Length: 232
Image 1 (cartoon, rainbow, N blue to C red):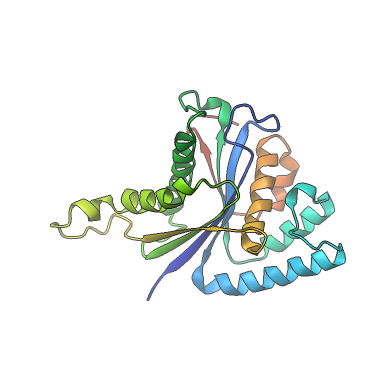
Image 2: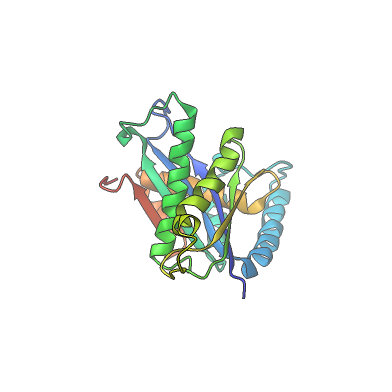
């Protein structure tokens, strides 16, 4: 039986030391089984469209302009679905060796963050070893064209390295043999990217000191804080 999963992510903050609003950069979102994905997607779309109608909003419902009461309502809805909320964050000022003037380096670090999150989900068996395809959906608004292929190739090579280069050896069950498909989605038409947006934004607020918002996240969520030795 095929085991497919969707990892749907958006970011919050800026991976740049001069960003005035926050020193934290976060990817946040959801990990969901394919069998649950379509039903959740349909239900959440109806829910958001109902809210847009109530509030007379014709465009995308942006987290940045949401009132707290509406944020609570949306996050309470997201608690009820059968998926795992996932986050990976970094304290930007701690990245002393990253050359922020080179966009390829910044892109490479973002790819590394996504890879570390997937690694964490595997280590904790939240993403099972028998997953044979992980579809990664990321908001496309800040994506340079050069990075569109790079994340997919990076994930395939990293997680399947033993299989790629030891093709003459028998397969060992310890490594993760999943395929990866990375797609960049337009948040204005993809409602689960919008869900990832509010989750990433909320987690960013929590990590920046608004710890009262933590209770609005679903119990059992996964958070990986980078760099490893950092406390924040």
